[in-house]
Length: 284
Image 1 (tube, rainbow, N blue to C red):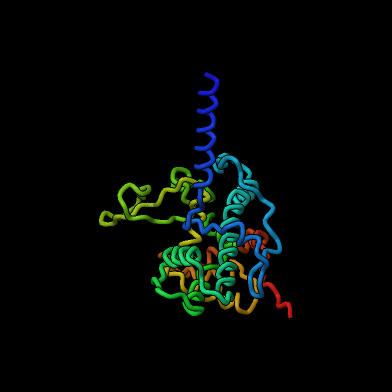
Image 2: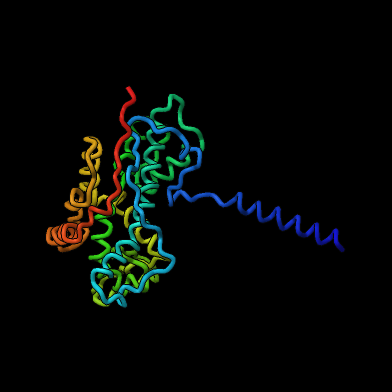
C-alpha cells in the first residue's frame, strides 16, 4: 500500500512539473525570455532611469466611494500607473531585442523569426519571407512607450475617473469598441443602425494593455507614432503633451478632445508619473 501511495505521489509531481514547464509566455503579451533580459545593452537600446514606485493594488478601488476629490484622483492614478509602466517595460525590452537582432551578424534564428512574425501580426504589418535590416526596422515605430501621463489623462476622461458603467462592469477605461455580439456592453445612447459595443476586459491591466496596443498599431494614430519616432531619433524625452495631437481621431470631438486631454495632463501635473527613459550612449 505504501508503494502504491509513493507511486501516485511521484506521478503527481511529474505532472505538476510538466505543466509548469509548458507554461510559456504568449506573443500577445510580448513577453521576453530571461536570456534577453540578461543580455548587455547595445548602443541606442533603451534604459529606464526612473521606474515607477507604485505596485499593483490587490483590489480595484471603488472610486465613487472616495469622497475627497484629491484622494480619489491620486488613488485612480496609483491604480493604473503600474499597468502602464509594466506594458511600457515590455515594449522597451522588445525594442531592445529587435535592435540586438538587427545588429547581429547572423540571420535571425527560427525562434526569433516566430517572435518577429508575432510582432508583425500584432502591429498589422505584412508578412515577409526573408528578414532584412530594412523590414526589421519597420517595427521600430510600433515598439515604443505611451507615456503614463497620456494613459492617465485618457483613462480619467473616458471612464469618468473610474466611475463609468463601462469601467465598473467591463474594466474598460478607454472607451474601446468591439464589433461582435456579446463582446462588450451596449451603449445606452447607441444609434439604432450601429452595431458596436464597448469592449469588456477581465481586468484593468488588460484594458491598459489593449489601449496601448491600439495606439501602437491602429492606422488612425500614425501621426502619433511618427512624432514619437522623431523625438526618439533626436534622443528627446517623450511626454504625453508631445503625443496628444496624434489623438485627433480618437474622438468625434477632434481638436476639442485633444485640448481637453492636454488640459488634464497639465492641471493634474501628470508628467510626474512619466518614467525617465533614454538611449544607451556610445561606448566609443
